Length: 403
Ligand code: AMP
Image (cartoon, rainbow, N blue to C red):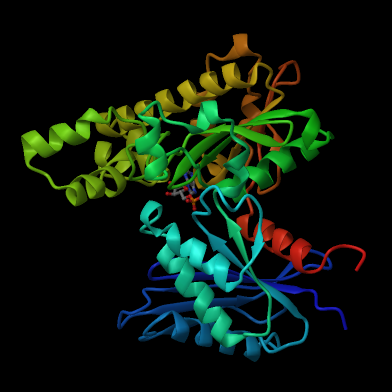
């Protein structure tokens, strides 16, 4: 029997998100989440999609190994156990692949060692990803494990976009450059946008706006990323739920010298207490819209700052690409918040972008065009699906077509 299933694992420091997919028809067999790992109140939520309802476990799950065992038990209960010969591989989301990993990679000891070497540039993410990989290897040592890197799609960026204008020796000694993140989403959404236009990805130039709690923009020319808004870390670029995005780097020395803050304090301020949260006390766009409707001025200003930054990136990437065929909104905010799309595109008619208000207001979970029929640039809403993309890339590597 040909093995057709892929388990996708997205391991965070205290959580594991997972999906089991059948690659014959790209269908989901089960999805779930283990959160608050290491606490007394750990929670596992498991939803089989082959029948039967959602199940929940609350109670201490001590570590990632226990989390993986617990999710494996849930899958076994659905007849989808990880010991099944139908499981072809496990695909892992790995946040930072540096410059070395430009494509999905079967994990060997050397690959794992290289992901470890990248910890200094991804201190929050790579250690959790490594723990997830080691745990999964212990569970099924015989099975191919594949790393799919968030940075890989952006490795095609030219040096002119990837380098910071700082001393080259210092930059190279410490691997300081723009890597970009959310690459799996940007790859998937730019390809789906081309499909929505009935074109091959090589024929179209697309600006992708991934607007979730984290947010990033990318300029994709003929299927290849030529610029993206996140940099050495996910802090650069757009205003996000809790991250500042672009900021004068001198703000950091100023905070150190004048406010006596440490590097860790400033890191926490800019990554966790800034963005929409810092500006108005809320990072959920639904709540911000509700407050604006009630006349809340701080929420309105936070929204305006968010939109202003977004517009700047649309304009910048228009200039970088020279010709834009489509602009795609994706992730939690991009897929759901019609007022964000409306405000971001408003006033860009001279760039060929005009929304159809009715299409923009429509609620749907399908990929769709929301621009006016007369507009030169197609504006699209394209739901992202990072797990499906990780599964697709994993399966393509371990079970190439025609084998
Ligand atoms: P993500 O990181 O892609 O899961 O996106 C999460 C964010 O999407 C949340 O913080 C919300 O701000 C936003 N979001 C989700 N649903 C909606 C909605 N219906 N309207 C506006 N924003 C939404």
